[in-house]
Length: 426
Ligand code: UDP
Ligand code: GLC
Ligand code: MN
Image 1 (tube, rainbow, N blue to C red):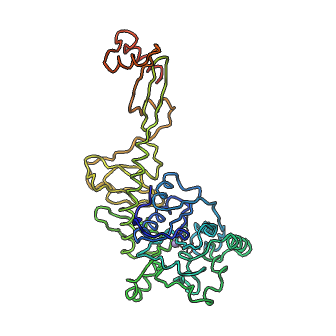
Image 2 (spheres, rainbow, N blue to C red; image 1 turned 120 degrees about the vertical axis):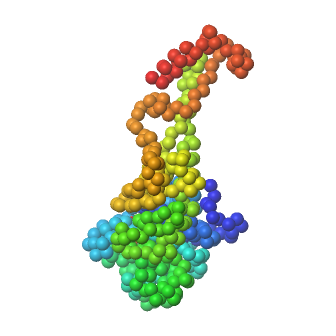
Image 3 (cartoon, helix red, strand yellow; image 1 turned 180 degrees about the vertical axis):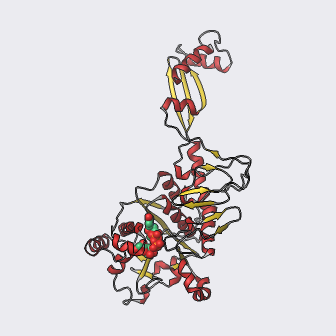
């Protein structure tokens, strides 16, 4: 399926790519919105995403519909717990996995972007920069932030980075400390390698730089939802298209306008992809053919085998199907109810009570552990029976069936069919 959002006739630079990383389905949500935002602004470069084994097969299918390349890599973890503790971000040791982007040597030049970034316009001009270009970090401007950087894939550089990591570790426990130490002259050597802050505007920093944001903010090109709180941690009301900030979110507070943009892209472009995948999965039917003597029984089984995360709630008929509402992408809950707010705590979505108390929760039937035959019996949706004629002339038999001239009282009597069916199903 061609990736959506590609303008026909757009000249594409196929040996250059935007690259991001998602080590789990949650960060895949960010990667998908980032990828879609790049397509919405008709980038001429390829889109690549690095994933690790934890990413589900369903999510990989969705990634393939936004990204040109989905590459599985091994997890690299710094295990630099002391430094990560300083940042209160123990989960960031895994960001060493980012270093795999240097192995994408089929590209001459790439721009890495964190999965929690979002482009606000076409930023292909970043490919005019050289390795290693990055924007200053809002926390320590003589360091760069490694959420957006220009680099040239090279196995030599990759191996040097791994060796440096083994010898020196990272002063922040994540990739940023390591990269700043490795590209140690970034602050002083070449101003051309300093990307304007507008290419990596850390959304939460806006809050403390409001006069500058008020003056320059309209020129922002990339917003970065840096910090422990990500867009997918917020509540969002799909009916009113508003992000709800009711103080339940801890940590960094992001600019509402940027959050709304993130959620608008998610709900307009990513959710339909997930639903399309669900429909494709559900339409997939498995056939069971069994032949008893002259009777071939075909059972079509419709198996709702969509992986948990991709089971977008299906609203009960009586609600407004045109404007389905869903819970947040953090962990799409496997419930069907007119959700107006999805509240997140931890990694599961707790759905608020539906506005209309009369509408009951309709849960999808949980898939029980059953034997294959029981499951076939339970989920049989279509049954066809074909009689294998004994005589060498199948045409006569077929014609009899087609003309309704079966031997109802004899060999084609229903009790014979029922006996075969019972034998098959039990
Ligand atoms: N990342 C990931 N899985 C994780 C944590 C991080 O895939 O569990 C990737 C993802 O691309 C993310 C980047 O590493 O954007 C850096 O992490 P994060 O953006 O959370 O750090 P921050 O920018 O908030 O310091
Ligand atoms: C920084 C960067 C992020 C990096 C993390 C860990 O805040 O925003 O890209 O992965 O620190 O080093
Ligand atoms: Mn980030």
